[in-house]
Length: 447
Ligand code: SUG
Image (tube, rainbow, N blue to C red; front, side, top):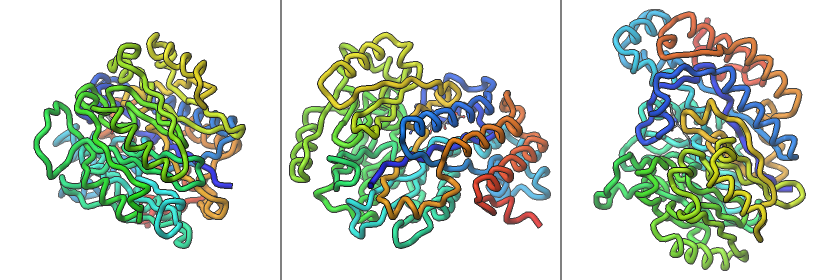
């Protein structure tokens, strides 16, 4: 049977609030506050357990090594690893914060994924996102590429492309700007690429960065062998970006035949619905559009609660469930809207509210924390078994977090060589737990 497997980012030990993402309101608001990496990782693992308890397959993507000493070395810092860290921190704590971010936890930005049902060769295609809009995130793609190549190593079943070139033409933020509509996960569907700007077009009136370019979306579609009939490109509205929707998945989410979105996500939602309906009809299904109108749900409430950064999943009984952050339950407009959706005539029948406050304070909700990968039976067996989650493994990881993670981390801690050692000891133990030896640079260069 073909399933959708969510690969959640395991929150790394350096989770902190450095205010690195201009245009991401939560990141700016929490800048300088103390973070709790232990609670962040445990909240993420609790979400994974919740999904397993719902009967859904669950995977994990390991954190990257941070602070990233090879990156600082490439800037000219020399000496032992602790000396590199100390010298860089003395020069610029802000620089070290960029090289220490745990931002790879938001795996919706790890890659864009095309299921075999649509790709030209029947393989699952991955393009790691170059994330070049933000300095701290642009450091992720090389390690992401390596990690995906290891986890999806079987070349008969999977194709992991190189990330797009780091040029302003090709800003790529991965699955956060990509929706898939289909009759069922295994059927050929329609991949909707949402872009923030046309890098070859005119100027727009944006106050915040539009991270995804049309040219990047088109390149990914081409590389994945997507036929025109299975592809659509559409702009994100400047209204949404200016209000703090730095990725489309802050205002829109899809699952099978449902597109769930806010009225301000797109300039002309009716036009988009028409294009999608025509294309979907040719593919043999009818999309179900569920739009939250501004008059009922103000855009500001959407951005603060992350209503649309929910996971919309199909349960084993065929019904759909929303996995939402607790902030949605605590905001009256969004709670009322969810209740009306549950009572309405549509496939969504359940809402689950989860506490993800540590990630949310950096602008990452349930949907940011996961990468969706549709897999047929043969592809499922070809995934590296170490990252396929089950209760025992989650319990082991919880124990590992409690052993290795701090419950308080500030920007001032990032330059401490003792913290570097701590993170490496933690990551080393985790790779043993998940049977992923030599994943990290520090493991491969250690003699
Ligand atoms: O890229 N925050 C991330 C949040 C990513 C959310 N992902 C999706 N919407 N799919 C970002 O802005 C904040 C880091 C800091 O400020 O310390 C950060 O990188």
